[in-house]
Length: 246
Length: 269
Ligand SMILES: Nc1ncnc2c1ncn2[C@@H]1O[C@H](COP(=O)(O)OP(=O)(O)OP(=O)(O)O)[C@@H](O)[C@H]1O
Ligand SMILES: [Mg+2]
Image (cartoon, rainbow over all chains, first blue to last red; front, side, top):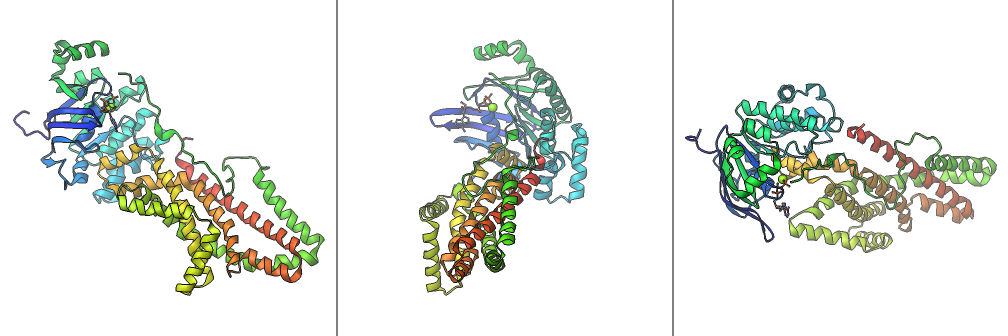
């Protein structure tokens, strides 16, 4: 895996909100097929890091390349780059005025000019995959949180992204429905999807992560395998964090 | 590192406070006797009774006024047709990050809101008829559109900014550009939120068309004035005018209310 070129490459990235550095000289490489789990206390810059990859947040310093494209370039084809990056949010963000099916087909039909019948068929396949096929014609408000989040994952997958970004996908869910969303994510990981996941679900991290990243105050303080994180964390703040969370 | 479950912002219905115009009946109110039904049937009943009891005074009025209603109707409909897209553009302009456009539109809103409609009507009417020699009806539609475009713009702006930021982020992360996001994701949702205030502005506009009778437009009020000045039945004539306006306004507000209900299908059951 390490011989391949990284599909995401961040170098010396900094982002300021006023005086405060939300990202402070962050460098991170993600390789094709790799699963990276980012952890860290609230306000440590995890979301900002994730959102800077698809330029939902524009950064002030450093370079970010995704699949060879310079995300920060003035003339970057940002919409084309975003099509390669699926994103799942903590608050689902489904389009409430559209049925589940249309949530999935809108982007392929409008952006890729996929014929509607084909897009529908593909969407139904994805909905089966996240085990929610029977809700295709309902509106998001009629679904539970866990169901909505599975739809959101399917919606992101409908564009056939090369990379999936997850920002605390289960934090708004109750413990029972958290499991069903994590199951979908584990399946996706096993299929070889490149994933960058911000989460506090340590069970998921242990099972799926190739590499874990610990952030605090806008910096990456430690990187390593789950084994390393769970058994021999080095940085005092990571030690403390792991104690609190486990 | 507290991650208390956040309430889903999508499920909190947004409502914009209604300030003027007419009150829109609650579409989900199942009761038969409401302020709306009392007003409507009261108005119709009064009209029928008056025509029945004092036919020689009221019947000629009721026969005469419809020609004015037709003009009022035309002016209202055309003004609404032009006002809604204008309001949408004004709202978008007010939210634009392109400073010159934003300033231009904001100034327009500021200026329009600072001048009474009646003054605008005179100003545009005489301005236009002097320069372009347009018919009074057209000048009336232009003035009303200009004025209400500014108010409608504020409604659109409020409606668009009330849509949670997550919607834009989700759309952008799928690869939609700004315009596509606005068109497919934001405006359809905003439309639902702003429908009551938009309907409200339309009703206010309908009522304000009575101002055009000051110009040489033979609308409902103008026709009534002419009738009154020849028949000397001032009180009777204006009673009928009031009842007519009331009935039209009530019907319109019901239409808005029905549309609102039809657009609410994606809310939680
Ligand atoms: N739009 C913004 N304006 C100002 N400050 C911001 C903005 N977004 C984030 N911040 C600040 O940047 C820092 C990093 O925020 P970020 O959301 O990336 O943290 P996080 O690690 O994702 O936290 P959480 O676990 O709470 O989601 C925080 O201190 C936050 O207050
Ligand atoms: Mg976050």
